[in-house]
Every structure is written in structure tokens, then in C-alpha cells.
Image (cartoon, rainbow over all chains, first blue to last red; front, side):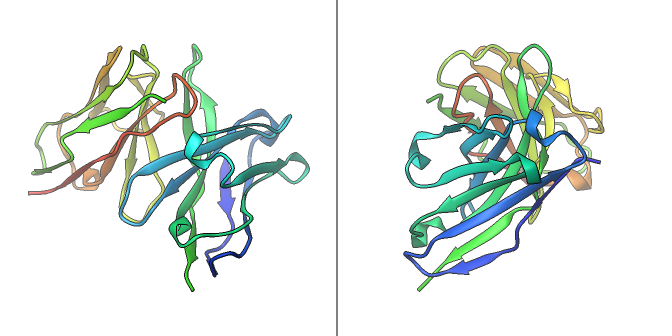
Length: 122
Length: 107
């Protein structure tokens, strides 16, 4: 059974660093892109970026480029999302999701983690 | 980046109603369009990929159509568990932007 299990909720202060994780199981982790999606309180889904664990090829959405770092360690089947200096505006639920191939080059997110709630408050 | 719009923003419907949600893109994306359902407090789940292909395990009352810049998600007979927010997403180019969502609630 494919599963993505994310790290627990975090409460941090502005300016602090943070790294959250997403561990895959039930499939060959290296062979599928993992994406990160932000959902701010009461708002919609935002595509942040995506990584291919096999070679760590990473793509970012422009609003998130330079604001977060996406990485992966294929030896432990885990992807990461990290901040070097959190802002109050980073308060949100963060989901990881596996991108699969639906045929003819059509990709979509088929499995999602349960989400990690990050709260940034002084 | 490709911009996405959805209409309506929200709708109220009754069990058994036929519901249609529209998604439009700022440029042609062929059929690189996906639909997701998100129930309150839950992670999104895929419903439709490649505009009209039903994800495994999704009830057949859900269907998708469209190509180019205009797409629709139809629920043929709304069930109690379908009250949720629905998002379209394009996978034609990076970033794979999501639409703003359509909330379906009980009339």
C-alpha cells in the first residue's frame, strides 16, 4: 500500500529555521516526483515545488523560489521542505503528494500525505 | 505561469442534484487538467486526470470533460459525502497551478 507520512505539527517563532518531512512507503520512492502544496488557513491549494528523488532534480514555483528549500534523501525514502527564517505568513498546512503518470504524459498527484500544520507566532 | 479560474466560487445543492463546476485556463493546455476533492480537515484526493479519466476507486457519478481552455467537472447525482471543495489543476507546465476552488455545500 502506497503511503506518504508527514512529520508532526510544528509551532515556531518568526526567524527560526524549520525542516519538515514526508516519508514514502509501498513503492519505489526514487522513481516518482514528490510535490509540496501549501494551504493557508481557509484558503486554496498552492503548488510550491517538486523534486525527483532519483537525482534530486527540483523545480520551484516563482513565489516560493528562494523562500523554501526542497530536498530528498532516497536512502530513507524521505522528502523535505525547509525554511531558514520563518515568517508569520508561513503559517499554513503543508502537504506532500506523489506525482504519477496517467498515460500520454498526463501527470497528477495520486497519493497525498496527511499534512503538516506549521504555525509561526511570536 | 498559467492562470486558473473556477466558477462558481461556491454553490448550494441538494442530495440527488446534478452539479457542474467549470475551470478555465489562461492558455490552451490540451487535456492536461486534473480535478481534486477536498473534504474539511482532510488532504485532497484525485478524482479526474487528463480532463476526463476517472481515478481508480472514484464513483462513476463523477465525470470530466473539456480541452484547450475550458473544462467541466460534473457530479450526476450529488451524495452526502460529496459536500466538499473541488479544485482543478493544470499539469501542462511548471508550476502546476491549482484553481481557486469551488465549495459545494448543502442547500
